[in-house]
Image (tube, rainbow, N blue to C red; front, side, top):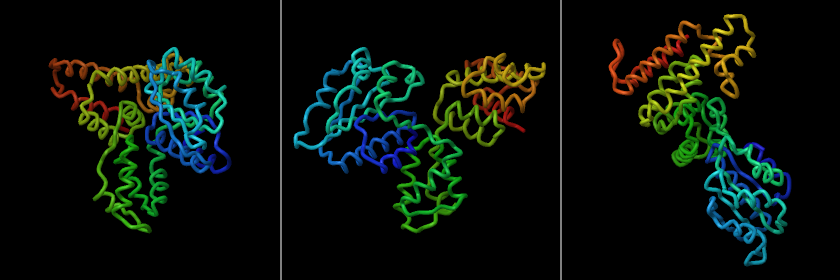
Length: 337
């Protein structure tokens, strides 16, 4: 289930004994575990045991903890926190078999860091077949205003639409900081207050965090102001240019191949295949190929090559010596409508 479905699910009935929490959003993972603990305590759990596991951990401790009676003879909570999604040979065996344990009076909560390969692992499939799974995915930029409105409402606050937009822009990609800003607003203003654009502008820091995926989305969607803001953010964060320019170059190359295939008469599906595009990037590249022509995409590739040279200390005629200036030029060039 999604994180948003957890609270309604818990309100409908008794707590299941085995839970798995995973996803890319740490704040939501923490909150999901907190909800499960609270529900377990409501049902009589008085003891809590935390196990921090790794590939070299003594995995025999897990069944021992689950089968040992509470010191007070009541229900107990056992939390297993994996350091990585690769628990080792003994860990994968134990996690594959944990669903067959009789969890009498025990609520077992397993939190697993996200990894793209996790759902393909045999041990994960066996574990989740016996468990309730909560997937904590990032809150998208489009979802953030509603997320802020809901969180502020729980604090007894309302916010103007313009205020929600500023909050979202300043906290995008950094949900932990967003939660802290909501808490700060609840301390600054009494319940029943309406948070205005001016109040947010005065009290909320710009703590947004971006990565190359966000930059590609903004460039290919034609959102130049956001693309330039992300470039500034990446520069301020000290991102290594080679660590992300290869991905930008590759996606521009794929977009150029798709645009050329479309110009040659191929349909969308065929053009995507010819361009070597698969997965979630398909929608982004399709938008860009529909908006940018082959000449512009080819020019962008040449600029990528120049940025690579400048970042290595070479002088490129008619280019700025600061590669970040040229990355901003690339972003504006591709995002221009």
